[in-house]
Amino acid sequence: MNILIAASEVFPFCKTGGLADVAGALAQVLSRTKGNKVTVFLPRYRTISGGAFALKSVPGTFLVPVGDHYETASLSHVQWGNASVYFVDNPKYFDRTDLYRTRFGDFHDNDERFIFFSRAVLEGAKFIGFKPDVIHCHDWQTALIPAYLKTLYAIDAFFAATGSVMTVHNIAYQGFFGKDTLFKAGFGWMDFTSERLEFYDGVNFLKAGLVYGDVISTVSPTYAAEVQSSSEAGRGLDGILRARSSSFYGILNGIDTELWDPEGDSFIPVGYYEKSFTAGKAAAKKQLQELLGLEVNPSIPMAGVVSRLDYQKGLDVVADIAPRFLDRMQLVVLGMGDHNLQDWFGHISATVPTRAAYRGTMDEALAHKIYAASDMLLMPSRFEPCGLSQMIAMRYGALPVAVKTGGIADTVIDTEGKNTPNGFLAKYCEGGEVAWALENALKAFADRKRWIGMVRNAMSGDFSWDKSAELYMELYKKVYAAKHRG
Image 1 (tube, one colour):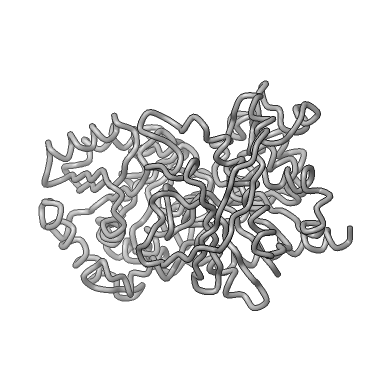
Image 2 (cartoon, one colour):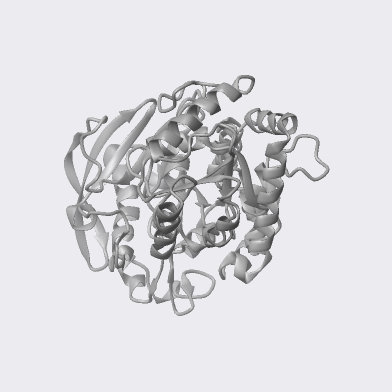
């Protein structure tokens, strides 16, 4: 099957969050399946140059309609394992210091940037002669593609048998713009209706993908139910999702188990696996304590945070409750985001330097070290579509202390009445609830036999992409069969 993956970020080429990890890992797994030909399209940002990948320019250029004019696009290419990756280049839109924003806010022309990219994916596929059976679109930045296939490209013979899958990674990010964006995107007033693109008197890119995608999905079964349950959870799109419930699927993300592998991880001092984790984690903890200036103590529990610092992640609750626990544990935080949270974690790190450490950077090596050294991972998200951190943590033997929501509810098994518990769950992202879950974790840590059993439960979980990729292949086949019946 010819599969085109369209995404605004793909690891290891560019990344701001979990979308990049998911798109990259899925492309690799699908490309290793016999009979699949996988092509990935993403923008060529300023940060994508050189490095481990030698990009080759594709000869020639092509025109992309944007509003009442045309922009010129060119392509670069790299072969990434079995997947072909094409980078859409236009300096006007992508030669910038960041992918989506400055420190003052989003780029003012993000609507036009991703209109251009979405049209360039379709025109670029024609330019290289790759006729997809299915285009898998990720988040609002590519959500116009399913709309284009059903409208402007409906009579284009090249895409006559092409279907679309629209995946929502986080419904909080929708790509909402003023009504003038309608014309930049090539649509007209007939498309500006509540059944199509109109949303509170503006244009909603994600809504377009949900309305026009042949199949839609999100990144965990629980999140799929949550976003249909209320206007608040679905951010105003719950009605559309309920109307399309027969074509809406929740498929749990996996993680890259080669990248996140404690047995072969080059960033940690001693590799370990399920039956040998005690020595490996002890060595990792000692290394991290020395690196960050913490008290070197093998018996003190360490709680780690590897996260974007924002309201969704509930880390304001961690900031609120942490002081009352630092006499019994160490806290290590890695992440950037909300300036108030950055200041607070920096303050507590300076105030109690032997018990708390904060690093406000994007540091892949340090993330590996924290997962390996930590006994627990703090993840009290207010909502979490899927979450990768809890899966990575469990693979490294760090037990999640989290809130029962979204993908966390699908992956973390609490201690209450379960035979194979692998973490500790609060019912809500609220100080008392999260403190209760953390207290339970510290009590369990003191019971060495119980703790070892829980860590082994966590490390024996299957968080690979294999099952998820099979489920996506089933969606692709549904779309393929429907198109060919048509």
